[in-house]
Image 1 (tube, helix red, strand yellow):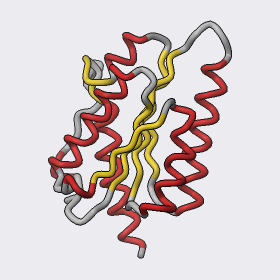
Image 2 (cartoon, rainbow, N blue to C red):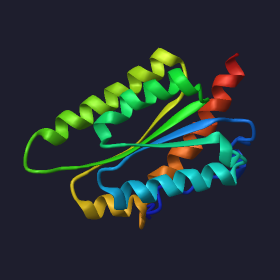
Image 3 (tube, rainbow, N blue to C red):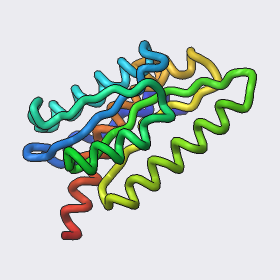
Image 4 (spheres, rainbow, N blue to C red):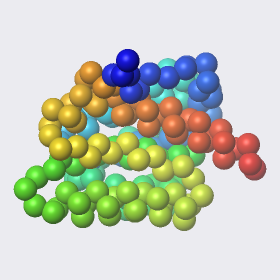
Length: 161
């Protein structure tokens, strides 16, 4: 049987986030999607012990700006991790390809540059319905997945120090 809720996870395997500072940067474009992803991420961080004052929520105009915003946040606010939330939906031009490639590469580069987890919670879908299905719909919430990944990656990084 095919798994439909892709965001299900074992909560006992998620580290306690007490003491962690986590940035969450959400794109304003496609707000019905990114707003739901943001809520999923923030609620999950709180559920796992991250204090409200240690969740640094910021907004940027679009998904393309996530990489530079994450870089600035890591330089100036020094969080333990940054979750990048965005949504790019396929259109009739190649714009989709360029944005998706630039953002995925940019987020990777920022993570490597700062040696901190920078989480890719960006939906890259063919349709708005597919995005809604992954933003709290039938396939879960990619924001939840980003929060869980951030907590696990912070713990991993700390295990190496």
